[in-house]
Length: 303
Image (tube, rainbow, N blue to C red; front, top):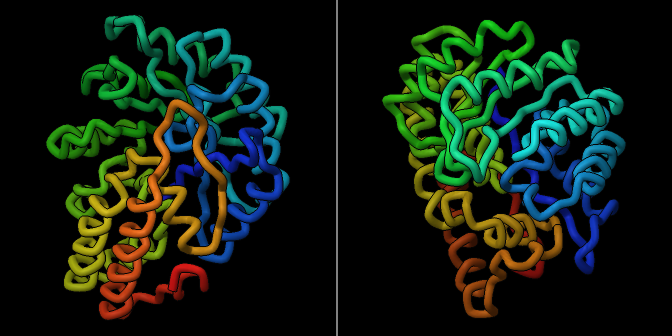
């Protein structure tokens, strides 16, 4: 069971990687008992990072969070670059990697299967996750192809961000790979069906909610699990469903962790949007505390 896997935003300072920001972010998750971090993914703005920046970001997280498990996103439109990033991650001592389906060009299922076979074969000591997010990448792994992925000895799981609950449950029933979901709206039924974890953008801001859901489910507390799930579903629209990286950054800032601003051409919040968001966060925090979930007060500037 992987539980919550946090996709990290990339801390920037004046448009450059911010080592101090990485340290702050790593400390934030350590204090909240997060075990797995997923840097250089969609939330980490990987298409806007150079190869060298992706490597440097992994190095910074490895240095700042040696006690946390990293799942390095190494996916690329280019197999050659994905192979090189995997080698870089392995050299840093990272044990897990994930790779989104190759994108931009349309590929058939055999081509996708061959891509993962070739990638995983280059680092047999690493454990890989396939990653399907067709709404961004333009290619998806069919259920039949996922079943065939288990032929690859060191491909251990799939991160499925299709948002299709029926498909998620079908993948779990295959019992072929560890299935982690990138769809918060389905977190509880997915967990009850045997899902292995979540990669949640909103969870990067409020990991406590997912931890409360996991704990209640593990304890057989159906009411507690339903309560935590209701809060997760309420938080999703507030934070832009995880797809608004500017809102994720502002949520972290509200909680006391400044990660800077996203790179252009990604959007940034206006002053009015920022003020409205802070009020929404204050209101939501009261709801979380009323549910009996430990949720620290916001940074003093936003209280």
